[in-house]
Length: 192
Image (cartoon, rainbow, N blue to C red; front, top):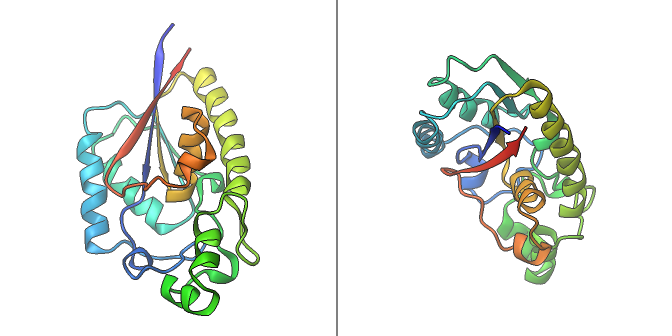
């Protein structure tokens, strides 16, 4: 048996993150701190082998991955996959957290922001995101076993939250409390 590795990391800080806005599926560029976050991850992964990389369609994911791949000429392919995209916050996207609290109250904000089964208006719940991320993980395990590759994934905070839940077999009560940092990666082994 041989171990192949998955390195999954969140994009660096964006302007929406900095301004405490719901980003969701909207576009938001990396801040100068976000670029430093990406460079820190790149240095931490510098001596790992990466054969294939996945990114989301958002520039924040792509720009973070570009920093990482500067050290990985062995990476043969970059695949864009929507399943690791951020959770959709629907009608809340682009709005500041403080605006939502002011309009709907702290209790409703917490449900929409961190409630596992609560969907913001026209958005996704964590349970919805877990389904698509779970589907991606099944595909990924098959892909790694078939191609015998080490993989890097540049994703978004909430997709990584649910990726970790599935891979680490954690309970939803624990998962909703996690903060997914901009400058750290998570590593998993797949035995082939």
